[in-house]
Each structure stands twice: as structure tokens, then as C-alpha cells.
Length: 205
Image 1 (cartoon, rainbow, N blue to C red):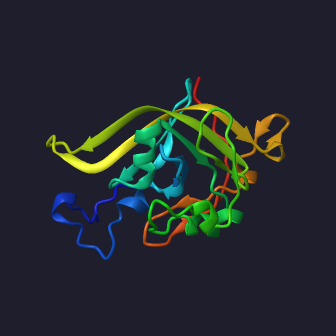
Image 2: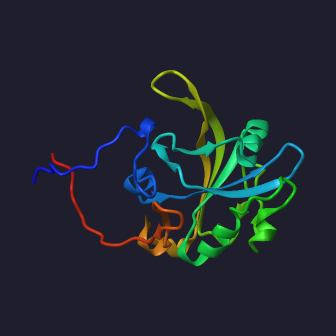
């Protein structure tokens, strides 16, 4: 079916809708639940809705900081961060960690979470999370528009240098994505999703 009844708009001129649909269309998105530590030793934990994996070998993940947040400042100072899997059982704790608080407030304590020492980086991981990636900064890029003008967003890319997976999520050695119960960010001010239908589709040969 060809769709000919379209709501079309130029983003720079506004969308003329109750809520910007961009986040809802590009979604649901995995959550970048990122723990960092400043050069002075202050620990930070924050979720980022613009997050994904970008490369396989070496494994590279990244998140976008819209504005100069504590996570960005800490990564700039130390070159390290940890991604923690945000799961359905941890949804409330994840949400608590996104409170707008001063840098000296420890979000692990705020959300009732356990900081566990990492192996190869200084920032701790979330002990309650079944999966964590320890990462070292590979690139820090300030985004810009098509007109070349810089925007107030920084893309933080990191190479995964250590992986932690709860053995309960390994079925015959294969990671069970659904069993991990990841939560995903949708559009709107409060929309989240869990995984739904699973189907198999092989690549053409």
C-alpha cells in the first residue's frame, strides 16, 4: 500500500503536533544506563535515551549527551564509563537515577543500587544489573547540523573492554535477550516498552 495521506513537515519549522514524534518513530530505543566517575572520585549514574551499539569488532557503544551533563564531563576527564542493562525489575531504580541533582549526589545511593568495582575501568557497575559493559572512550564528537552549525549535543563512543553477563541469561552458551527483560524508551514524556513478538528471519544467501 502506498501511503498518500501524510502529515509532512520541516523539523526546523516545527511539527504542528502535541508532542514531537521523532523519539517515538525512532524507537523503542535501548537505554544507555551509564555510570561514570569524575577525576575527583565523584560517582554518577544516569540513563540516556539516545544510545546504541555501533560496531562489532571491536565492540563499540555510544550515547548522546544533550547538553553538558555530569556523565559527559566525567568521561572527558577520565576517558571511561560503564553501560549497565536497564531491566524491567530495575525500571523504577533507573528512573530514580535520572533525577536532576548536583554532581556531588551519588545516584547509586539515590536509587538504592549497589556499586560494584569494575575490572578494567574506574567507574563502578550496577550490581543489580545482569549485564554490564566496561568501556574506554574511543571518540567524543560534538554534533552539527547540515548547515555546519554545532549543536548542544555530544556523541560519546566507547570501546567495550570488559563484559559481565549473569550466567542465568546464557542458554547453552547463547545470550537470551528476552530473559534479560530489557526496557526500551519510546516517545512521549513517559513511554517505555518491553520486548514483544519474536520472529526468525535468515539473511538471503
